[in-house]
Length: 91
Image (cartoon, rainbow, N blue to C red; front, side, top):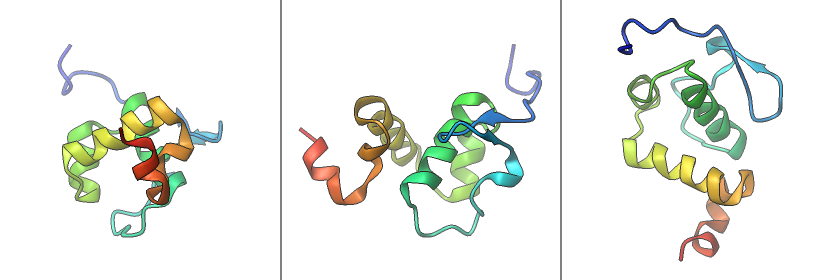
């Protein structure tokens, strides 16, 4: 089924275990990306609340930047999203 035909979900479970809707996502004007905001955007894309393209357009992210957040979560959990620790996790 194509993305255009796939029914949209109303909410996903956020990184803290609570329901996350489009209204709960960070503002499109967000410039300061803390761990929680990054994790919410990744959860929204993974859960089908937003497509990767929509998330990148909404937050002016590159696909590579978003994918790096996703890989950091997969490999190191939420602490992997800390910008102060990024050099420790890259090898």
